[in-house]
Length: 510
Ligand code: NG6
Ligand code: CA
Image 1 (spheres, rainbow, N blue to C red):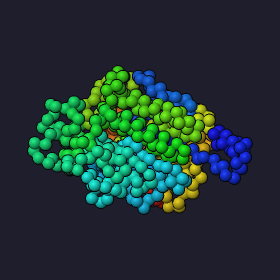
Image 2 (cartoon, rainbow, N blue to C red):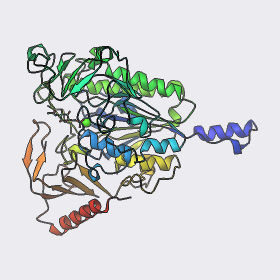
Image 3 (cartoon, rainbow, N blue to C red):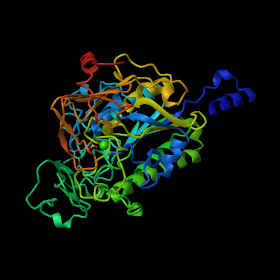
Image 4 (tube, helix red, strand yellow):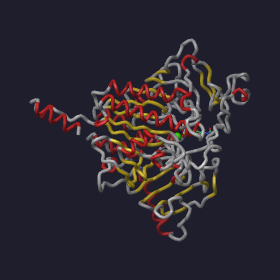
């Protein structure tokens, strides 16, 4: 709409069409953390309300088969940025506190593609893809390579996850507000026996840990890993969401006259789930749902920001998650105890860490006011496809060797009638353990190299369940993957296993 309007204005004012390049749309990807298929009111929960994301869905396309490519954070983000299945590379599993950058600088990433298309690019929020070279991050010096070396013009980050040390912001190449006289030290061993940890000062914690997460205490919460120093740079967990919104709005405002790509990487609802005081207790389900409402507020602020800048009609907003839901992920925040009837996985089996549908089938919404016709789509789309799809949206040629598994599903993302999503999709769990889900149409094959499936029932604690190595389900009749058809239909199972093996061996699918 806006493009046509600009052209018309150009003609009327006699500027001549040759000079009036239609402005490319801005793109904002909002990625939630650990948000399950059933965790929003527009995806069916009645336990609390998410009005802003519901509005986004009502004004856009809500996907019922939207996926992230893995059931943990690092591999999903790795694949989103590179357009390549993370299982193809080593070191794409959950990154520890002092991990070096996990993406090879030689790989062309989605940000590079946007820059080629003339966009300004930014990532704000949780990174969790490592920083620095082989030795890991130099917290007191220049933190590079990082996002700026793989396609982002600017970044404002939480380096890993907030359950991992240190609790500091990274702006571009540096820790923000760092006092050189109080340098940061990060390690995996306690620096002294007196160093306050979740074990020796457990009684002082404002939220107790249940497994892991018992090392350095900051803000009354013990974490994974140890650190000292950097006190002037440390943040409060309660303030993260506000910070992401503030920084994102600043970037949008500064780039309102140019096309921009913003990756808004929310930390909600990853553990420790610590909402800002104004969101504490807004639901009856405890902090896990309170931070969903906080996330919803963030989405509302971004939408209002677009309206204020007059950009809503020239911005494609895409909302997704990095993996399925989990209840107890290491802290005693009553997520399970206060769950009630809420089905975080929307009824699908499995959650975070699992290749059952609940691990990767997640909320997925696109909105572009005036361009996207509102509706609901059952097409299969995945976060890994955004690279190729946005390249097609911005008319940017893809390098032959990049985005090896990213399929152009732009028309499906725009909700165009008759547009097709993916024909097949590989889902993985953490790292490259050899556990896969493989969907082809309504068929779903599961291959568990270790004959163990993780976190099969999300409403219970993480449970590793014995499963046959190969399972076959028909999602049309059996969306909860209970009725294993591998024995009844060995030919189909063998065909799909052969195709999965081929996809792995080929090194690419695009
Ligand atoms: C696990 C952590 C979990 C979470 C996860 C990463 C323990 C016991 N568990 O190792 O709490 O941090 O890693 O989550 O430490 S993700 O969403 O970033 O992939
Ligand atoms: Ca996650």
